[in-house]
Image 1 (cartoon, rainbow, N blue to C red):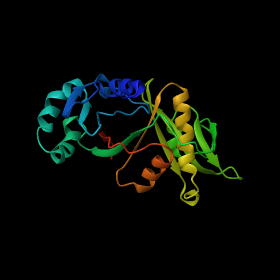
Image 2 (cartoon, one colour; image 1 turned 180 degrees about the vertical axis):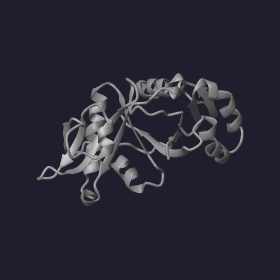
Image 3 (cartoon, one colour; image 1 turned 135 degrees about the vertical axis):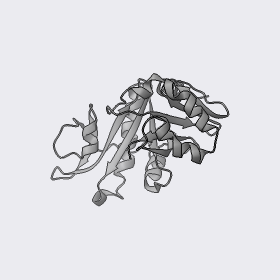
Image 4 (cartoon, rainbow, N blue to C red; image 1 turned 30 degrees about the horizontal axis):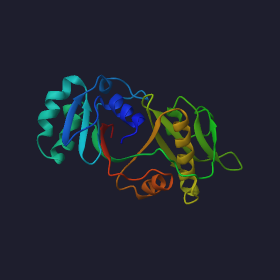
Length: 220
């Protein structure tokens, strides 16, 4: 049975769940509102291997349903323009979630995203981020939480090239996932299917590949 927190997250984030067989284009007012970082997400889809829910703003539903009657290639190529963002791209991800993060040792400290020396992507967040620094205080790796709604929080992680291979990313992700669970939400993790390193981090942190996929329209 699907975890209730994940079910509530998908309903809130997409507008409908479960998917049922095939592709279902559904309406959600959230596609016309800024997301956690203040940017639009005009189309978001999640599929569990049996069916997929594609969420768009209400006014785009008829056109997207017509577009989705063709091939997936046609859908991906035409979706940005159909949701009024012709210069954007449609990108697919592996969608992972967990209720049991790996019992890895904690690493890093929770600090404000306004602290000096953090990379630009961490400064997008409005709550504490989890950071590892070296003995001289230089940033090595960090993780942050995208709080999409009360029930589902997505994790992001990044490591500088010189610090890769030390297991920092997986330990950060596992620790951040435990915090999400403590907050009463379910932690999710998305990555490019071709990103082998990110897949390894997710797997090691306790996020198995269950065959779920997601896609959406994003700035290039």
